[in-house]
Amino acid sequence: MNSRTAKTDEILAVLKTIRLSAKDQDLVSAGKIRGLTHCDGAVKAELLLDGVAPAEQERALEATRKALKAIAWVTAANVSVAESAPATTPATGNPVGVRNIIAVASGKGGVGKSTIAVNLAAGLAAMGARTGLLDADIYGPSIPLMLGVRDAKPQPVEGPGGKQLFGPVSAHGVKLMSMGFLVEEDKPVIWRGPMLHGALRQFFSDVAWGELDYLIVDLPPGTGDVALTMVQTVQLAGVVIVSTPQQVAMLDARKALNMFSETGVSILGITENMSGAIFGCGGALRWAEEQGVTPLGSIPLDARMCASGDDGIPAVLSRDEAISGPLKRFVREVVSAVDRRNAEAPARKPLSIKR
Ligand SMILES: Nc1ncnc2c1ncn2[C@@H]1O[C@H](COP(=O)(O)OP(=O)(O)OP(=O)(O)O)[C@@H](O)[C@H]1O
Ligand SMILES: [Mg+2]
Image (cartoon, rainbow, N blue to C red; front, top):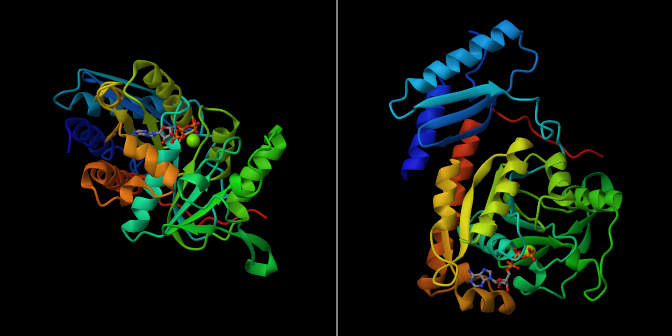
């Protein structure tokens, strides 16, 4: 475990000792903590205190500051009231039977999101987890090609109550759904807002995902409409941010980080892709540490990654450990981050699809 994770764990352990009143759960279990970060001994946190009387709010803030300052390495504790409940709270569009929905996002295009999403999904499936992959890049779906099922077509299947559902396409043990299956490759897709929202919602509600341990969602680049619609449609276990080691990509990654934090989505961590001689090495992970976000390892820049995408066989499945090793470690880091997040998050009610 690196020092960053240990420090965050230390902060969470302290926050777990604080309750708003004797009958309440602690702040962490009750999901009251937002925007937790630390840097050089300065800790910043926001508390969700909707409906709490002003005097009580002040008491909670003061108790939290005091508890944080009691940690040996903490030099400053900036604790304030979070604006309001996150927009994601009422999102109840999670497909029944799907346990963890994980989004893969970046601020910038072309940093390897789809490559990472494909390898995460195939790596989870290879570990024996029931896994789905939703290519939410409605404008430029690339996953069918990367999984070697470009010409496949989702078959209609009958769902509960006779509802017609799309049967996902199966590839390397992963259940896949993509707009690439539904539109012709050389015809550009022009979406207006409501159509886009509808299409994305249907990907969650009208696909026969069945029982899944993980559903990975590959997002288009940036923090636009698709990402926002998703966080308003489903409750995510969290998001994996992909960045290259370059400064400019990191600035863009910050935008993605802020957008997800502001909507109350857990940041599972950041992975550095295309690490190596050309773009440098470790920059994104150092940046992650500074942001108080879990580094999820780096994936080297390697021509075989590109080739495996074109061949339709994810690199994580390669027998050559030099290429599959870093990807397998990344997959395990994500599993641990989801487990940690689920242990910290308040118990979730069973969710059902809105019809
Ligand atoms: N670690 C790597 N080493 C070498 N090539 C890579 C690596 N990761 C991704 N690539 C290649 O870089 C290109 C872009 O990757 P990918 O399509 O996964 O990025 P993306 O972030 O999903 O792009 P977009 O923003 O367009 O959706 C692809 O050709 C892919 O094969
Ligand atoms: Mg992509």
